[in-house]
Structures are given as C-alpha cells and as structure tokens.
Image 1 (tube, helix red, strand yellow):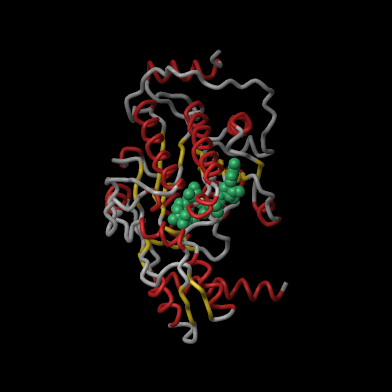
Image 2: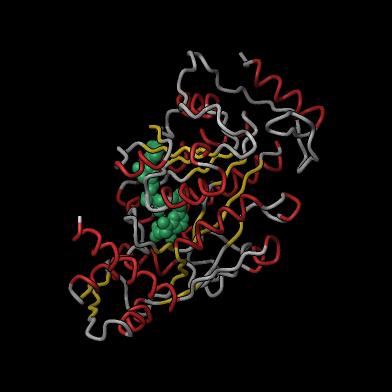
Length: 378
Ligand SMILES: NC(=O)c1ccc[n+]([C@@H]2O[C@H](COP(=O)([O-])OP(=O)(O)OC[C@H]3O[C@@H](n4cnc5c(N)ncnc54)[C@H](O)[C@@H]3O)[C@@H](O)[C@H]2O)c1
Ligand SMILES: C[C@@H](O)[C@H](N)C(=O)O
C-alpha cells in the first residue's frame, strides 16, 4: 500500500518535473524524472517525534545531521547555525551528547538503521537538507565488517529513500578511501577506476553510485564530496587511517614524542577541518546548474608523516618521532591516493582551500595549547 504523500510525490515527479520543497511550485527539471515503480515503505504509527523548534524560520533550509557527534558533525552544525539560525540545524546521533552540544542547539537521538524513526524526525521537523555523516571509518570498519556494512550501506539506503520521499537535498561525504590500488594515485582524478579494498571504501563507492543513480533516475538532489583526511583540534577522530595526523599534535605538545603507525614516506591528501566545513556549505549552496557532476574530489594539501614532523619541529625543535607501521593501516594507506585532483570542484563551484601545511600546523598547535590552558583554568 502506498501512502497518499508518496503517491502525490510520484504523480508530481512523473507529470510535471520537480517542485520547490517549500511552496511546491514547479522547478526547472535537473534530470530525467520517471514514474517510480518501487513500493515505498509505509508510516504506520503516530508521528510525534518533533523538536520544539519545528515551527521556526522557514526562509532558511531546515538541516538534519546524522552521526553528528563524530569528528565532523558538531563543527559543521556550528557553521550552519551561524548561517541559517540555531534552531534550523538539528544534530543527531546514537551517542549521549555532552552538555556543551545540548546547550548549543537542537539534538535528537537518531539511529540511521531505524527507518521509521528517521522518517518521523524528518517529517515532523520539516527538514529540507539532510547531511548524512553516520559511518564506520576505514580502520574501525576493517575491525567490524558486518557493522560497517550495516551502518554504511543499509543506513545509506534508509537515508536515500527518506530524502527521495521528502524531496530533500541530500549530502553524503565520500572519501579518498573510495579509491584503491588500481586507481591513479598521484594525482587521483574524479573519474577513474575505483576498486577499494576496504569495506569503508566499498560502501562509499556504493554511496556515490546509488546517489548518482537516484539523481539521474528520480531527480534527487544528491550531493557528495570526497573528503581527504580531515585534521581538527577540537574533536576526536573516529577510527580512520589518517588519524595519526591529529594525534601527532597532541603527543608533540604533551611529551615531545610520537610513535607513528605509518611509514615516514606515506603520502596522503589532508585538509584542515575549517576548509572541510566551508567546502561542504559552499557546495550545498551551489546552484544546481553549476554542478556538472554530483560527486567531486576536494583537495587542500598532501604530506607524509616525515614532512608533518619536520613542520612541527619548526615550532618544537626537540620533537621526536619513531615509526612502527601497523600492517592494517599501512596497507590501507598504501592503496589510497597520494594527492587529489580537484580541478572540477575549482572550476564548477569555485572551491579553493585556505590552509596549507604551514597554516595547518600553526593552527593545530595554537588551538591545542589554548585547550590545555582553558582546561587548567577550569
Ligand atoms: N574524518 C575524516 O577524516 C573523514 C574523511 C573523509 C570522509 N569522512 C566522512 O565524513 C563523515 C563524518 O566523519 P567523522 O569523522 O565525523 O566520523 P566519526 O566516526 O567521527 O563519526 C561517525 C558518527 O556516526 C555515528 N553512528 C554510528 N552508527 C550510527 C547509527 N547506526 N546511527 C546513527 N549514527 C551512527 C557514531 O556514533 C559517530 O558519532 C563520515 O561519513 C565519513 O566517512 C570523514
Ligand atoms: C580518510 C577518511 O575517510 C578517514 N579519516 C579514514 O582515515 O578512514
């Protein structure tokens, strides 16, 4: 049985092209829309799950972030709230939020494997943009393939269906990990062979292809950026291969010693977290006609552990690094791009990173020192 809302959506999509998410006026068609043939999932319980802010300003997008308590979600929510208003950005996760997150704006529990709950949240909070951050990253995914397959693939299917049914703009990040040993590695272009050897990479190629398929078949406004390794001072990394490039700063300041699980010459693309958040916002705001693709590489810099250590030594001359490569993470890193070609993102929607290695190191050391000082005071 098809819900009335879904039938209406199908009828509109089939007969008139896509519609404005707020006023339902017809919009220029972005791709060939065809009648749907699959059975939508049904809503069979009362929808009560809404945030107190569900009736706030409708001029701005209403944003919902899944997996928002990881390394990237809180910072992105902060930036989006500056632009769209505190109550127009709802963070969600399956973890308990710290006080400062609860006090900074709406937060709700949402498991991306619970389709009905997620749909209820999207409907009751009149969401227009969905940012899907829930995932198990590369190293932790290899340690738990079944869970990674479930969260990264089944979770994505739920999100895709909900985005389609509710005409959302859907952003899902991909990664340098979506490439593999047979991809060109230096630099890696947007379009090339992708045969990753991790469940994380496989799930992200699946994301890219499913999102693009829904875009071309049904007109879903799917947008995807392949992030490099993201470096941030104020949040813990979530079990990736690029995490060394965060831990190194904490250890450098704490003990002036660091043991690196990658070889000194392992080159990987990296990006400062503020560039990552800005890229995400700019890409989400880019007019559809400027996007010649739906999945873009974004780049900033590329360095090895040895180059990073040398840059840190300019500030902390006694800093020592020893190398003890870990077979799993070294194997993953050796199969990933060494640098990213992001010329399409630059040309289509004006992407340009602000942080290079020097600025990144200065900012990380300053931010961590400041955190330590604040912690000592409180
Ligand atoms: N951090 C990076 O360097 C990086 C690089 C490339 C791409 N990305 C992508 O960006 C996104 C965010 O990355 P991150 O570093 O914040 O990840 P993270 O691992 O730090 O956070 C992921 C979050 O997902 C949540 N989660 C797990 N299972 C869930 C479920 N069933 N339902 C809802 N939430 C669930 C976790 O609790 C966690 O808070 C991911 O999709 C990741 O693949 C990150
Ligand atoms: C690169 C990225 O996807 C993540 N930081 C990882 O290493 O798994």
